[in-house]
Image 1: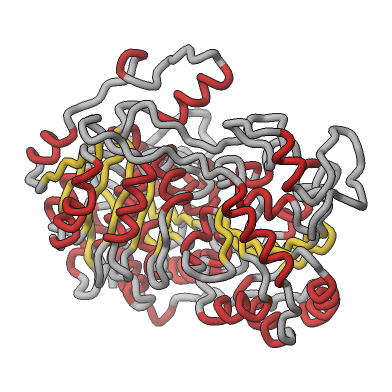
Image 2: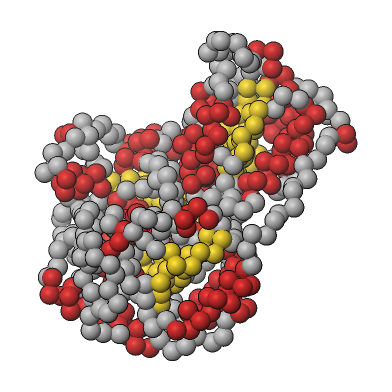
Amino acid sequence: MKLSDYVIDFLARRDVTHVFGISGGAAVHLFDSAAKHPDVTPIFPQHEQAAAIAADGYARATGKLGVAITTSGPGATNLLTGVCCTYYDSVPTLMITGQVATHRLKGQNDVRQLGFQETDVPSIFATVTKYAVQISDPATIRYHLEKAVYLAFEGRPGSVLIDLPDDLQRAEIDPDTLAPFVPEAQIAISDLDAEIAALLPLIAQARRPVLVLGGGLSTPRIGAALDQLIDRLGMPVLTTWAATDLIAHAHPLRVGPFGVYGPRLGNFAIQNADLILCLGSRLSQNVTGGILPSFAREATIVMVDASRGEMDKFDSRGIRIATRIAARLDDFVPKLLGALEAAPPRAEWLAKIAHWRSALPDDRPGPAGANAGHVDAYDFVDKLSDATPSDELIYVDTGGNLTWTCNGFRIQRGQRLISDWNNTAMGYALPAAIGAAVQAKGGVTCIIGDGGLMLTLGEMALLARHRLPLRLFLFNNHGHGIQKQTLETWLDGNYVGVDAPSGLSFVDFAKVAEAMDLPVVTISRSGDIAAQLADVYARRGPVFCNVEINPAQKLFPVLKFGAPLESQLPSIDDALIAREMIVAPFKPGAPPSQSGGAGV
């Protein structure tokens, strides 16, 4: 059996239905094998970065292994950004890179290259993969494939890479004689039952607890056990953006997002909590703010994460993680659920949060004027929430479109909202959505800004070729809105490279879409949004929807560095903050107080 045939059949036997990549001299055998296999379909994006991201999008939607295949040299190095997306977000993907034949490898020779397009791929990818290896003996292919796939899913999931020289792809092997990979027995490093037993009194005694859900609960998805845990705990639920789709907007315990760009309601809830049970969030600076001692300063923080380093990183940096439980969430959640009694009453705390909903400004402008030539982003997202089917996969890019969507979209049970949460690469959403759409049973929505779409324009051709069930919404504010606001805050509005007058170049996106044989809808009037969205969703796809967003629209509220989360821009009256806060005001350098202001 040819080795490349073995590789593709190995993937098919693990239920991989699609592989993504661009052909090249060092990958032709792999793609030939994929094209001939009855259960695997190769998909060819326009760029290897898009191939890696499509594999990422496929994996997030399906829970299966995402696979990208490329040739050597630049084909391999172009994967790097997409690999970072999967690694930082704990998504199981396998990258298979072709390599020059073994007799053309430079080895220890003092040269930069020996073979044409030779590159030391494993070394480049070593820091953003769980396993990166170059195959040197065809008899080891089963071992390395099994080890790579095992590591992609084991513990904290992530990306793995196999570099496969061209002559080995062509080698004849006997599958029956190949040595397997046998995982080493895992050594228990903690007693999860005992840790949960110690946690139960903290939960029972807390007066102002919050449950923080993070993206780790999606790798893998926990499902019904998480729903039951939320109800059993009875705590107000805060979500990082990566956890937006883990609790429906209409759930009575849902408070919503928090953080630097989060709504004030979530920030007041986290800042006044006395107990934080944090599941699957690394508590990045995007949610804590930059001044770490000001974050949740009177709360006992319990953090559960598969990676102990994510919990230990705060030591001596201003946040104290009181209880650290190193466990996969699919182990922890069922065990905690089984140990919990009925939730203690939390009526007073829930009433306080309900009060904040009306007492705090939401900082959203009203709909744009009828003849403004653009729409308000939040107005559009609000109506998009009404139009989007209940089983939709929704992929969102980075920047303003992500901020407005995560803060404003009313997620329904059954919908998924997915982005590149930690690498936040512009241009992620379209190839990732394509990776999901090639196998989706329902529809896929892609939301992207003009900056991100400029980086992935070519992938619209792939969308058109396969007539995918995908609605592509361009949030077209004619610039990099989040960067414009940053420059206004820090550099007195001296724009450089953030819109057309300051150096950016854009195309007429609608004309490009038409040239690629995509139906085009343009939304530029507030009064037309609902009807035009109904038209877009009446089509299975593909369809391109150009949404003219107010170029001057801000991303408010937002935290300016140096302030605690409760004090965002636009500034509100200090007296209002003092009246509504329960804990004492933050004083830099002062230890957390043991008594706060009036309230719960």
